[in-house]
Image (cartoon, rainbow, N blue to C red):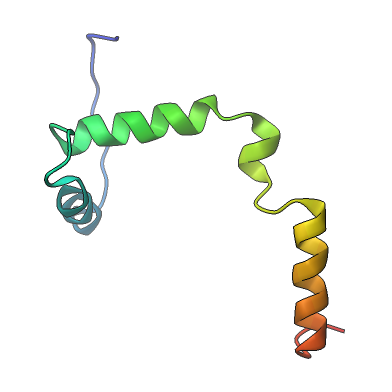
Amino acid sequence: MDKEFTTISIPTSLHKKIEAFIKGTGYRSVSTYAAKILRESLTKPEGKAAEAFSKDEEEKVKARLKALGYID
């Protein structure tokens, strides 16, 4: 693990939400949690990170939206 660190600025409101979210977990700080999440997001396969739905799921959503009159 890297022993050198740098600072990232995030909104105070987000920092407070993360603090509340990790309270009682094994995370020692907001920084350790943020580092874990950033590492995970960078190690996801590129195609999977960008694609929220499979093609089949996307077609089902489109069909449902069309049935509801949201799209033509």
